[in-house]
Image (cartoon, rainbow over all chains, first blue to last red; front, side, top):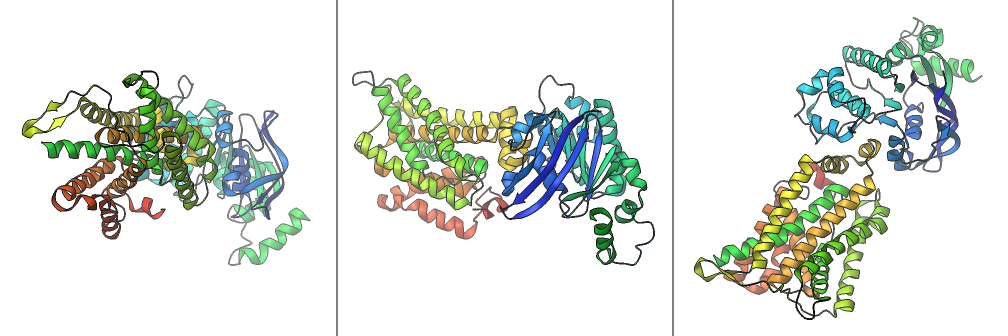
Length: 262
Length: 290
């Protein structure tokens, strides 16, 4: 499988002084789902924002490294240029236009003549048809996420970037959304880069996974292997029973550094 | 009837100004303090374009063409050369830029038109007589019709066209709009073009009823007051606010003292800001950002 997206030795600096990520490299093969997992502040969202061209709006810039889409360098392109190239982001917050109706949100993005139509989006998410005239601001968290994914699909993505899809959602809703995303990816041969704190949910549908910590990729492998890896299980998937009643900071930081950076 | 005619035309003048101010605020969070100047310069351009090749008699078609060309060029120019650079900066930076634009445009009136007092007469004005001895020129009727057409067109544009929906979405969340493939710069340029077009129409209305001069730019403050009375982010509020200001000005001229009518918008502004700072139809959150 060839890589659709390649990130090589990426370094991002905020406000010209604070290095958020350093030496980050990852590959997203065509038609696959890749999960980028890690704790708060690990640099996942910064990586995502670098890929989608959002860094300048936060006074951040890529100071080293390269991002390529199908071999073409896309560093420093504007978000609307990247969107036209097929790199579509579903952000963590403010993912829908809350003052527009559901139907208007879908029409906002829908381009004429594509294989993915609003009808097809309604097929994946029937609730969006029922809520068509409702303002998006009044939708529940799960419905907003469905709408955001629907909007993103209507932009005819080559690469779909989803930031923290599970944030604030009930486990049952997360499971449904993850399964739906997997189904959509398979049916449309859609490449997805999924950034998640909820490693278990993300790795359960991913083909490949990357673990980030303090601005670096510290672990990588097939999702199924990561799911069974003792460290990943212990740190991100609810533990193997060793960490009970102990602070994460007390134990994990030392072990993580020793094992993964050492 | 004279009362009705005057208030309606004054309402149209202020509503157009207020609509432009609201559109710019909604689209880019810019409070435009140069709107009065833009309107009056638009009026002068309308007059000069109409008189350009016609040997002393105004050609309405040339005047309209000149006004439209002026609006498109001026709107796009202001955004591309100035306002684009202040996107993302604190709100007062954009306000200061608009104050600078106001100064430049006022100077342009003095340099280009020698600050002469002009009344726009398109030469198609046999008066319509209304009950009670009031008269309306065809230009008045056309102006009111154009204002109504402008607001209906805005409503249809924002509600039923994809570009209009993209415009509303961009006003709410430019970053997301950008990521959905919308060229935000194009949308914001369009906002400036529509706003300048509305202001120019307003300047023509004002120049037809009264006169154009460097002092006439104070209509911008009446427009701003109308926008703030209605709520800075509401087009419906802009019309209601314009009516409130127009009615109050008319009653002041008739019942109290004409001299006070110039100061009245400030008084209304003070009262509204004290009692209901978010206006009649504005949203509290929106005003918090100003």
